[in-house]
Image 1 (cartoon, protein in one colour):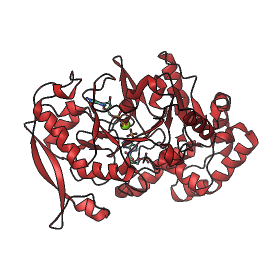
Image 2: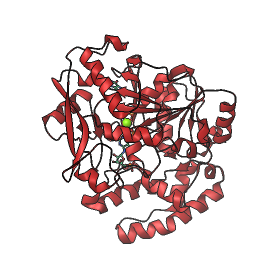
Image 3: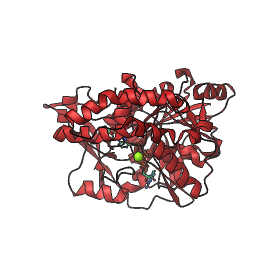
Image 4: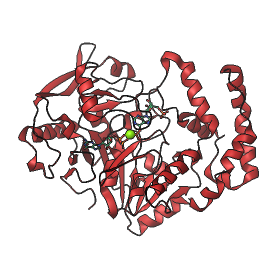
Length: 427
Ligand code: GDP
Ligand code: IMO
Ligand code: MG
C-alpha cells in the first residue's frame, strides 16, 4: 500500500494536517505537493499545538518530510518554521526540498497585496503570501527555482529579468516604489548555504522509495473547491490541490496513487471571498464558528461557517477518485437539537441534487435541507463507532449515503488520538 494522497474536499481547513499526522510513524515520506505558506495545518500532539504553514505535517513523525516541485517556497518562512520547530525539540534535519520548486520572492508578496487592493470589491481575499504571483511567474516562465539559488550569477540574472516588467507595473500602475533586483538577489542568496544540503531530485527519490514498497503520503493543502481548474473560479488559489496535483507536484505517475483520502469537516467553512451555498450568516453560523474555533491559522480571519453540504463533498469525491473519507470535527456538532444537511439546491425554481458546473448557478443556489436529530453527549472520548450516540451514528451514515463514498475515519477532537477508525487507511 505505498501511495496515499490526502486532500481537502471542501474549501480548506478540513483537518488535513491532523489526518496526515494520524497516519503516523508508519509513513516513510510525507510530501507537500502544492500551495505554499497560504496553508495552515494545525496538529495537536501530546497536548502540544503545532501550526505548520509550509512544512509537511510528517515533520513531527519519524519519516522523511519532502517539499515537492509543485510547492512555492518562501525561504524566510521556511527557515523561521524550521527554527521554531528546532527550538521546541523537533528534528527537522531530514527535510528534502525539490530542486524544481519555485520561490516566492519578496516582490510576489508586494504584488499579491497591491493586486488585491486594486481589485477592490472584486478581490479574491487571498492570504497575501505571494502565492498567486509566484505561480503566475512559473507559468509565465519567469519564475525563480530552488536550483537557481545554487548559481549566484544565474540567480542575479533571473531576478533582474523578472523585475524588468514588474517594476514597470509596480511604478506605473500601482504607484509603488520600484524594487531593486540586487537587494532581492542578496536576500535570496543569504539562504543558499542552508538550502544546498536539502536540495534533491525528489521525483527520483520518491519513485525509488515507492519501488521499494515504502509508504509515501502526499499531503494536500487547500482543497478541491479552491483548485484553479475545478474550484469556484476565480475565487480559488493558483494551484492544483486536487489529488492529480500530487503527480505533477512531485513527479510520480497516477498509477502510484493507491488510496485517495478526502478530508471533510462535519460542517462547512470557507475563508476569503466566493460562493458558499450553505453559509449561515445568522447566530447559528456564529455558534459554529465559536464552537469550532473557526479562525484562520494563517491570517486569523474568522472563517465563514455553514452546514454540511454533501453536493460539495460528493463532487470532490467523484472528481478525485476519493476512496475513503475522513470526517473531522464531528464533536463540534454536539448540542444541536436538529442538524440540517443539504440535499439539493434550488436554482431558478428547479431542484438539483448534484453540484453545478456553472458559477452563476452556484452563486444563485438556495440549499434544500433535511433535518437530522442531534445529540447532546460528549463524544470526544469515543474511540469506536459503537460508542457514538445512535443519532450521531445516523448522522454519519446519512452523510456517507449522500456523498456516495465510505467514511473510514472520524475525528472527535483535535488530539492525535481523538479518532475513530472504521477502515484502516494503510493496508
Ligand atoms: P487543515 O488546513 O485542513 O490542516 O485544517 P486546519 O488545521 O486549518 O483546521 C482544522 C482545525 O481543526 C485545527 O485547529 C485542528 O486542530 C482541528 N481539528 C482537526 N480535527 C478535529 C476534530 O476532529 N475535532 C476537533 N474539535 N478539532 C479538530
Ligand atoms: P489549508 O491548507 C482555507 C483561500 C484564501 C483565498 C483563496 C486564494 O489550510 O486548507 P491564496 O493566498 O491561495 O492566493 O488565496 O484561497 N485559501 C485557503 N482557505 N485554507 C487554506 O489552506 C487556504 N489557502 C488559500 O482564503 O480565498
Ligand atoms: Mg488550514
